[in-house]
Image (cartoon, rainbow, N blue to C red; front, top):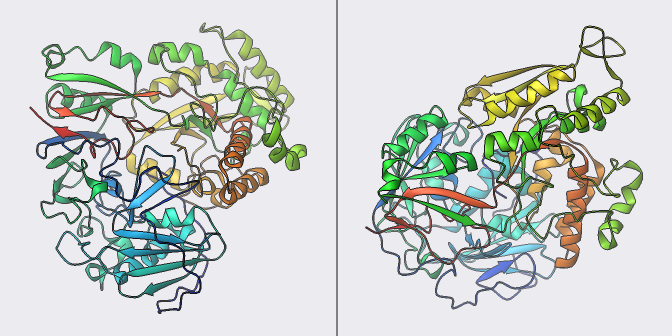
Length: 605
């Protein structure tokens, strides 16, 4: 449920009622809600288990980011806002515990109620909840926020709002949302929606705010100052309404969070070594082993921390845009995967230290198991057996090379696959189809993307040996965002982080509707009835056993679909940071993920 780019879902008219309605059947109000089973923490919990309730307040952290920004509203499609603002400068009715697969605890809401089928959810606001300007958070603010986000906000919010049949105030502090159909996950998704101040946006076009308006929220941090495109400084609100709430105890410890923006990764690293940044997240094992020996590290002023996690690998690699007929045939996509000399590239770029991504949910219990599908997984796949890509049911594994530059065995296999798909090398060494059309495409790269240009160059050399005509094109962040939103690319670098609680976002990542909607996260353009049906079953699962089996079945369909040429993933975060920046000894299941740095870190000389 996390990622900085959101999908666009076709707008569907829905009637939203802002009237008080009688309540037919009431459930017991609760302090928390879980996707499956019961929340781990009791109503009287003192703090989240991975938070340090004794962490001191004060100090600051300075983070780096490659790119730029021209908006401070992370809730709209127009413009490019720092992605961190969505999480640091805004909060919802409930907050997430990253030590549980999908459990929310009351934040702006003191309680949550659902019926047995989860056909509706009711939240009750805390009377003490306040925006940063001191004004109370009201039912009207919540209703306005959810409707505005769902109709005028970023398209990632639209699909959820389309599943809300009515929104009704209940008394002075209650809000009930009734769904178009029962949905186990929807109460949790709504619980995480940001709440904005309605009065701030009267007479203002919400979808076109840029940097002229900074959205008011109730979060612990507010935008203090910024330099357009270059830096943003967040300041901890000393009057933050929830500073003593158990859920927030040990969180939001730093007085200041500063984000500096750079043209590329090299400039950002140099800023870190010069002391301009106080933390650096390293994604390259090679760089981690070789570049972090500068004087501040030797003196102990900067320390290197490795933080393990138990979350899915997600998918990272080169995605092939199947809207382009070149990549419509799975055999072509499999040839592209064979041509990617993983063992050699991983050794050159990353010292071969990080494990390969073998499926979308690898590194977790949700990952597909080796060999043929069995038990419930096989049952969930059976209705689609005749249409599934080879390897889905029987078992699919990625090709392995001998690690040499030549990669001869896999290149021969790639050539054979291309011939089966109707592509042959002519006398001039050019790969063509029967109509004489050359196999020609470009790999689109965002400027400043660390290591990706080097990987693309090595890969393109291998593809050229197959007779393909490949160019590598680097463009700036703004152009890159525009082109990927419009699916105007052949092949590009692609990352989708996945959680231990996959849900409705799966439709946005690889659902058929999203494939036809500009701005969606379905960059590969896959439209597969099996994927759509499995996602529907995933969302309607009522017990964890079926949930795991359905996810493993979905993982098989996605992986065997050969949509992405996978890279590697890190089963730990590598963070170099100022020695005065500390983090808790108790780590959540998600490790260093959204909600860890800087939320749980503190500063102590």
